[in-house]
Image 1 (cartoon, rainbow, N blue to C red):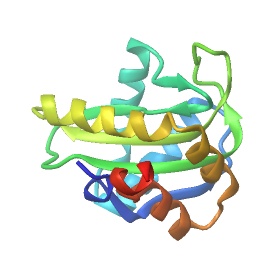
Image 2: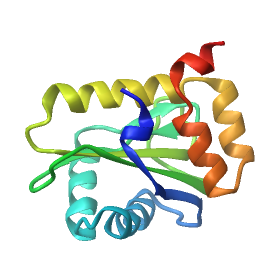
Image 3: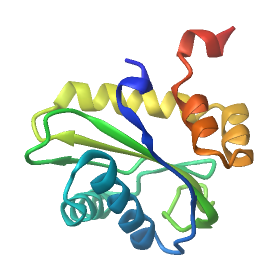
Image 4: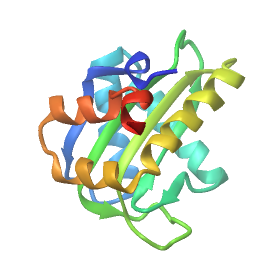
Length: 154
């Protein structure tokens, strides 16, 4: 599974100015509405409900908020780079400034988990996180995120 299959070119937020987790998720939900035609309120509610189960922050300044939503037909992603880190209650105590959102159909069990694993593998790479933090152009961020795994290992 390549991330280019999950994320649209216009689903990149290169400079989110929101301060709190809820504000960040609201910004991303607005972008999900524009990029994928989703209902922003349903996206925010789904993401917040998932966050109540436990933080989606994985450490290193990264979070992967995700939700399964009714009426969706495929898994989609969005990427946000925050101007200032937000508190996502990460286990390492660090604020989060790189966020990859995954939104999936309610019945997408294994596919949803594969997508989460793929994003997690990508964002565990310290060199890539550094590049994402240094890049402000949406097209360049999209290229970094969607570069095939095989070429990354070379």
